[in-house]
Length: 118
Image (tube, rainbow, N blue to C red; front, side):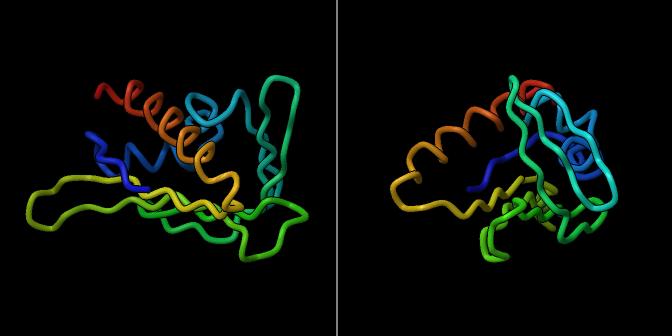
C-alpha cells in the first residue's frame, strides 16, 4: 500500500524507526534489544527482528517465529521531480486476512499523518 505523506524523508524515518516514533502511531510502546523490537499493544506484545535498515529510506521486520517471506516493511519514496514523499507499507498476510490488514494499515497511517500535520 502506498500513502502520500507531507513530511521530509528524515522526519518520516524517525516515525518508522525509533521507539518514540513508532509508539506514537504504530503501537503503544516499543522496546529494542539488539536487532529485536518488542511491540506492545494494550496488554499484547509481539517481537519482530529487524532484517534491514536503510537510513531515511526503509525498515524491514520479520515477526519472530514466522518465515523470512512473512516480513513487513516501511519504505520511503521521494519523487525526483516533485519532491512528493510516500510511505509504502508491505505486509504479507493470508488472503482471508487481507481486507482487515488493509483497514488496519489505513487507520495506522491516518494516525501517522495526523501526527505529521497532514
